[in-house]
Amino acid sequence: MVETDALIPESLRALMAGRAADGAGLPDGEAWLRSVPKMLETLLGTWRLTPDGPSMHGQCALVVPVRRGSERLALKLAWPHAEARHEHLALRAWRGVGAVKLVAAEPSSWALLLERCRPATQLVEMSSLDAAETIGAIHRRLAVPALPQLDTASAWCGRIAERLTGEELPMPRRFVTQGVSLARSLAQERGVDATLVHSDLHDDNVMSVTRAGAVGGLVATDPKPVAGNLALAVAPLLWNRWDEAADAYNLRNHLRFRVDYACDPMGVAPEAARAWTIIRVLANAWRACHDARERRAPAPDLTREVAIIKAMQG
Image (cartoon, rainbow, N blue to C red; front, side, top):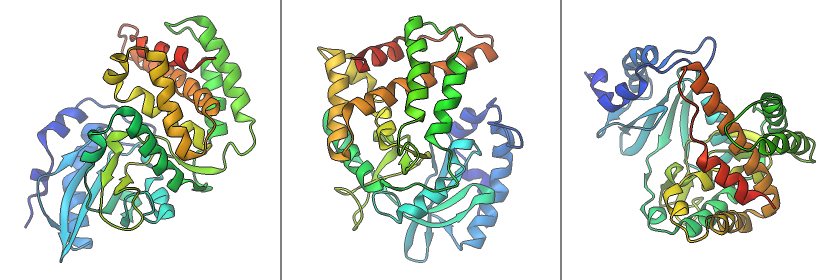
């Protein structure tokens, strides 16, 4: 019999310690971890799986390599949070084209059974510009009609405009004022909610497989799906691999080049991507400040956010 408690890495226990619930009716990090061994026991039995190597984890999920006969798979258990609620629906819609294949799902347990992938070493070895172009090509393959169950970009813009109205953030006031107007404008654009978009695709959420449907041997993982405009998907390519951006001779040009490189294979206008990036960065800034106030902590350093907003303007 498998000792399922031993499948939880100590580093994940440390990460979940003290993590608050994401919303009403959802467990905090420690409560979720206490439920994981029983869920693993049930899922391993139901899906006839055998653990096959050390467990891994990210910020919000446990991944256990497993076998089912000759199949090499991965069992993913997500800490329940709003952004992961519809992950299985997005993966099912993509059917392995540009994304990791979904083998089975148990939404009540926030559990997914996925094909086993390899680390995307080829992406790590690319420059950030080439990586942006490659990820843009993956986005193009993922661009299918939106699902009715998903949160919409227009509703999200409305919430951001409301949150930013009258808000004092540690950045130039004009950025916030312009952001409110921009969010309201984007919410009214034609087709704003038309496409199924992976809203958190960056280097760390790309894996390698050898099969048809992959894009240059690469697939997207860990979708945060939204019914939106493909242009909103570019932003994570700017705030990730930040050290490379900070080391660039001209930060503004480097960030705008990342946008251009991603937008070309996506078929997206760079100016649209820059506008959505401004709103997403302001949303991140608001969240960071809100969380700091909740913890009665000092205001966060928004140097990176200000730099991105400046680079996207004009």
